[in-house]
Length: 306
Ligand code: ADP
View 1: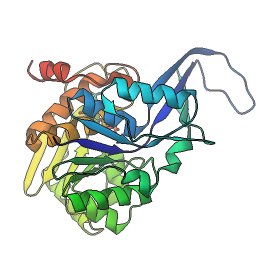
View 2 (view 1 turned 180 degrees about the vertical axis):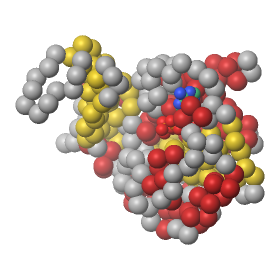
View 3 (view 1 turned 90 degrees about the horizontal axis):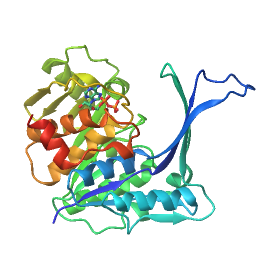
């Protein structure tokens, strides 16, 4: 049975609502507090598991309350956490998020245990041909490299969601089969922003730019409410977004990437896999929280077929 194997971050997102963001030295009263499971790795693993894939998570939490809670939440969402590491002496990764009524926010991210993910933890699982590997950039790049090298040796598909965007080594570009980026990340890597009506020539140009740094795989660009565009070999895909009332777009990209991995793992064609991921993400933006709002397969299929 092929699996989705995610090597990435696991975070506790602590979200405070305020009328207006405090200035340095100022104390303000918050109007709400919530704790959400987060971290791009964990979010994507949960999205893939909810899309009915067999998912294993490689990563690390601290030996603290949040770590235990997150591990339980991952397992409860159907993710295999048997390889998850519990590190002594470092906190579980945490994001402190303050959101103003206007939607404006400030975020402080503490990598904590995520920074301890190393080559050994990234290669802890025996991989199989047809497994799908998924990585982001919230855990150390060296570990991601080791993970993808390990995947290449096994003949597994490697999907990279290079977020938050950072310079990548040529080897990591070369090891990536499928690149999933949003418009901001694409602009970071290619130096060119896409137009509102993203066209095939624009995507071809972007891919040519990426070929220069060593990327020769399929390029998938998520376009928020506008849906998704992709280029795989000679085939261009343009899929419109679903008209929905978005209440929280945090984690939309994570939902998309996790669902795409799950579909590719099942052997679904790219076009249909993108349509599924696009529909599932449109459902996710209608709920609060990232890890907590991933739709089930049943919900996504019902929405897609309506
Ligand atoms: P990120 O969260 O990484 O910035 P996007 O904003 O591009 O990623 O969103 C990822 C996907 O989620 C989109 O490709 C789309 O399928 C879906 N999505 C995001 N925002 C909306 C929205 N407002 N309405 C419908 N679908 C959305």
